[in-house]
Image (cartoon, rainbow, N blue to C red):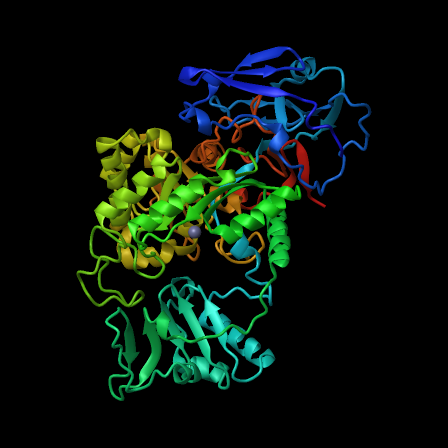
Amino acid sequence: MRRNRFAFRSLWVLLDAGVGVVFWGMMGLSFWVGAEFQMQPVLAASQEPAAQPSTSPTPAPSGENPSGEKPSGAEPETLVFHNAKIITVDPQFRIVQAMAVRGERILATGALEEVLRQAGPKVRRIDLGGRTVMPGLIDSHSHPPGAAVYEFDHEIPPMDSIADVLDYVRKRAAVLPPGQWIVIRQVFITRLRERRYPTRQELDQAAPNHPVVFSTGPDASLNSLALKRCGIDRNFQITDGKPGFIERDPQTGEPTGILRSCGRFIKATSSVRQPSSEERAEWLRRLLTAYNEVGITSVTDRGVGDGSIELYKRLLDRGQLTCRIFLTYYVDAQAPIEKIAETVRRVAAHPLHQYNPWLWLRGLKFYLDGGMLTGSAYMRQPWGVSQIYSITDPNYRGMIFLEPEKLYQIVKLAMQNQLQPTAHAVGDGAVHALVEAYERVHRQDFPVREHRPCICHANFMAADTIELMARLGVVADMQPIWLYMDGSTLLAHFGQDRLRYFQPYKTLFEKGVIVGGGSDHMQKIGRRRSINSYDPFLGMWTVLRRLPRWTNEPLHPEQCIDRQQAIRLYTIQNAYLTFEEKQKGSLEPGKLADFIVLDRDILTCPVDEVADIQVLQTWVGGQQVYKRP
Ligand SMILES: [Zn+2]
């Protein structure tokens, strides 16, 4: 499939008050389209994403020419997709039968005759056999470079129970020379059926001759050899004044193997092969292809450093990006404010801070609180004493990492430098603290709405927080699949009442808060084997049903949203989160031709089938990047 992408010129002219005009230079046609967009443009002139085909790479298409015809001559060919049910996700949520694509953008949508009239003389028709088409899906939260190489050395099986964990330890012990470390990271005990750590004795039995560490968040369980290697015995005391706790047998004083916030004492060395930077780039490319297979055409990387940026840049330069990537730069909020300011200015001066629809460095991320899977998210009310989370202090509310003053300074700095601030904020206390910081900037310094200040996760919310978010224009990047994965453990701990505003999608839609759906994918490649699963159809099903795994009871079903809203969550609203709702997120003339073809109708199939929808074709910028074999 070879087309001259650049012969076609389109030009966005943005006028004020959200009215845009697209001039189709070749055709002499113009459409008033801006008034149809539900979101108003709020970008500063220098930041405004404009159609710029000359800066886009050509993705390597894995599909074939669907009609088998070869285009001839230099004149641009228009692809006309027809005999389809095209869900445009425009403000009226119109369904149309046909769509014309020229170069990387959509030329027209509507009835076939109408579309053909606008398509010009050189047309290639593609009959979609009545299939459903929708905009390419967008994931608002992922960690692709790390996830891609998670299994670089060896395959890591799913671990849903203590037996699974011990099985894996035994298998590693069989292949590693005695004395080498076996390290398991980020398997959350709240996601194990037993909801507890594997014990020292269990790990000893599975691998008596290897030091073993099983870690979750800040805590870990070690076997006897690992404790010995770390010098942690009956007499060991923490004397550096920092937090940490060694659990001990009350009779003997012997460590049980469970260490809390003691990562600095665990001297594990890696026993696995590390990828070279070229291997990292190749595995990242493969992961983006895997995203295309489930219909993902754009992803936000929630936390890059210079190394990850370099990997993406390499794929961009080679024309190997098959997903569009929005980058948020990770900054250590514990560093002195002068150092943070230096980082912010350096990121703002980076060449990728200029808009490019394939790769755009436009956000800043930091950590504000702990996590809900480790019992450390910062809550407004005490967590409550808990066996699962090992909480003994009835007044414990979790951990927050920044004082209000510094939090205010960081988010203000980001917005002053045209970086969208966002923070990992899980508990309702942390979420509210972040929104209050945005409110203070709004009150004292400048209006924040145009900066679309963001919150990552925002699992636990409250009515007053949501009101304030709506008033200020704060957006949220949320993870439906956590409700599916962790809802039953959370319910067992918190009870129904405290989960009233757990991922409250319905309320957020009603109040006009723009939220987007994301996975927080961090491990493994594969639709359902990945953690957290990057399957956007599982995400959409979750917001329709709110049914946690291992239960039959929906979690606050009054917060379910409908299919149109679920689709918006993963398309136009995610485009809004990255300031790109005029570029993508719906299928409308002038927008990037990012779309997918489904094996069934997402609007009418039985609701429980939504999770299993298969993608037949994925197109990014008018190029087919995936075709189901
Ligand atoms: Zn994340």
